[in-house]
Length: 395
Image (cartoon, rainbow, N blue to C red; front, side, top):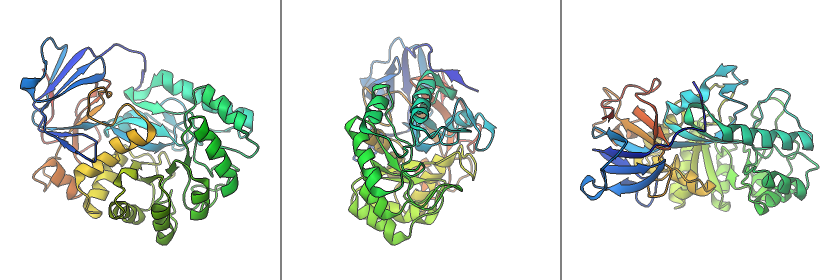
């Protein structure tokens, strides 16, 4: 169900006979290549088989003309410890999500921890502990970037420096703690940014009893790096306010599964019309009251492609390369030097779509045939997606 981060190297891995190679890069979403070469977890070659050094590989994978894409990056999750969520009292949710193609998760705060400390010493201790724990332990091989403190009143710049010095690189959703005013959040977000910590702000109505409304004026004043679930988590702001955020802010536009689907579609369209699709990133905002969605990222891709009329190959970039670049991650893109985190997909059996991209454009979830993290196969045919028409084979 879960495994430690420490493990053997992948050695040399060759993936050949790729039918469709999605890059994760909006500027060139489809690559003219059929072969990938990996060495010890990193991509060392992308191209045609005849042009790549494929000799002496420890592992050879025949993709069987299926699609290979960067592993999906869930930009908004709420982990606690290990592969357990007290929010739904469910075990194995991270491993299950890996079976949905997710290879990296980013914490928006460990807010579901029973008895979560809210004093400054305690919240700093929790953030450092969560960061250390998930750095040492990777359920299903998934890279969980955790340790995202929820800021509280009374914090000073020194607190943010202490967190950064200890290895904390994220803030939990601004607004989930006692800091809800724009002017307070602005100072703390600026301190975090000064010390290399990326911030996300809650957007919309209360997510659970005890939380509060964060309106568009607070979001604009705080100026966090990520406008967290701009489509609400779950309750969205009025569309005219969401539109104003898209137009007036230059920060990341995060769309989540556990939000308002109509606003997600409208916001994605707005980003395309404003010619800033690079700002759009995707997450699930799970676990949440609505549960855990192992296929939440794939469902978001199918939703936006089919109902927002955005080409599927571009929406895959929202879930991979966009997030990697905005958050400074060495994954999410198919290019030399990046982590060998891949999801192998094909159109689901009996979909009306003639190809994988066409099937997603019609609203169908693709079938996953394999997931690879750091060049190591983590699962074969997914236990959660509809069965893929074709699956890769390890030779």
